[in-house]
Length: 318
Image (cartoon, rainbow, N blue to C red; front, top):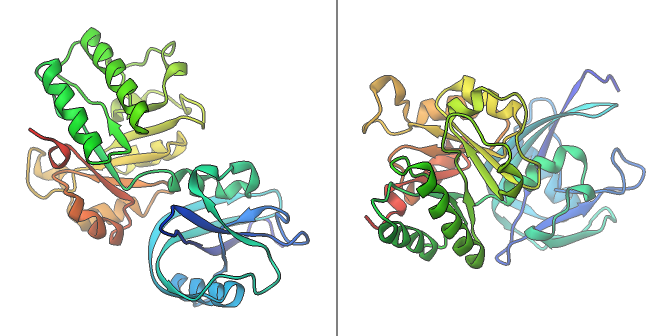
């Protein structure tokens, strides 16, 4: 095969109610044989991704795909070929999955997915699947009691990921509050995103963090991922330049604002859902919509190439 040709592959992610995902073992004689994969196959010329998914799932697993939404797109170059993975979440299906071509299939808990068990191109899928679809952002608190109420409220909403954002606090207060909140989040099974207080980062603090989030300005002055792949890394973006830089930094996700057509942002900074889709479609990473978002906007977000919703007021008791 011509190494420079790009193989367009439709990939389906099928989750059950137990937060287990369906995976299949690649035949030993195939490309990347002996590794597990998320089911799918090549998109034929003139074929839609949805049609390819339904065809592949019917042929390989005996499943009829009835509804699906875009999840993430991935470009990857192997030594012998380049692939474009068009990954979709299977929302509704009929049938009982079974290996119709003799391949092993199994439901595996998301937390037990190991990147080493999958082709290299699948790493971003695994990282995306471990992201929640809703991210809480803390509003500014005037004192510790107010902050405590905010964090407890957000954890009470079953927030799995909270962006600890306190613009009004000084650095000492931020660090003290963050340490308290992170300990509480760990007990609750949630992650807390640390945001460097200054425009630059104290790199000595990075090894101790579980999750890091940078502003667009902070991200713009670095040229490589600042934390290991085992730690969560996000970037706030406002335009295509920021999104593409976040992708180059190998960020796990990006915030994109402002989607709202009203609010505090200048009219030139508000792009609505159509503008959001145009931008999110141009990068290969999960993009969260930000800007007067509510949880009920999630389905609209997904239909516009978004991954999820991030918000302040929607997750705040204040």
